Image (cartoon, rainbow, N blue to C red; front, side, top):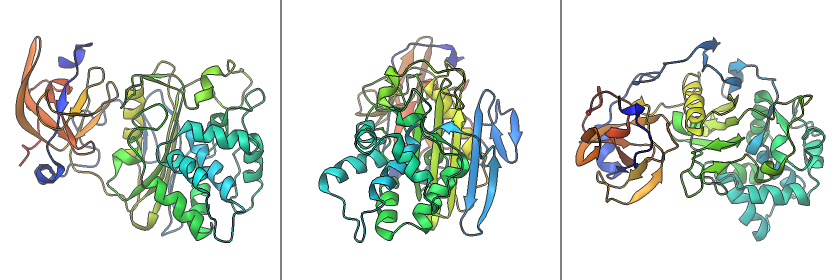
Length: 395
């Protein structure tokens, strides 16, 4: 099996989106070559993969009801989701026009779009650290019940703020339904422009909501812990806060788990931000970024999300470190990005291209990844055949 090979040089490519999307056919919601394999514990409709601890809340704003709640009050360390509160705290008393100084706009926009940690460090240190969380939890308009500052000994680490799925929904409801229009528009417009690569550590942050639904969506993602091989840029390691690497060892008495790697996807899905989705997850120590990325994707795709449009295509696993996504079906085509090692990808169609040789395997087929706008060689897809089953040729 090709997926047993490791350490080979990664390859890939792409053609234009306009010429290929017509070749992709719709697939069942939970379809795919590896979809559903290893989904053990099920709570409500949510498929919780083995080894994953999750807090889930899905709120349909049109009906005013939750369609999913799984341990919705459970506290998780927030990682970068807390950046929503940093922005709200900064904007809270800036009426009546809520003008944002240019220097702050230059920090806030990449903090929301690319999850920039330098900006978060600035606001945390400048505006009182844990006092920011105290101010936000004291606001009746937000109605936060499970949010708390970082535990004693970790006051400097904004990513250790405690939060729950239901409180995350409450934050989005405030932004969408109660916040002044300039605040709502600024926050949501930037979340709709979420970049694939995070601004600080260059990790691929289009997992969960961003990978499970077609636009329109708006997302604020979060990750915390030592992940290997999750890059879509030049760096290969990450922590949820830049200062986290200097944090003291977690205490056994801490109410919130600070040890297991965390990966969170939060935001809105559908026209008019119809549905708010919050999926907070913890993974086993040593989990690769690609596996965590895949697991939170499977979980998010299993949810009942009114107004969410599922992308066409079939999900497949991949193997290899830093497989390149290229602009043409050839190894000499420009590299667009790199896949997190072992991540699951959506394949829209496939096409013959340059023959790729990774002994003992040879393959001329390339898979088009509509969510990346590029191609990878089928040799790096976990399938026994060169030509992927049930995947159309690109027209």
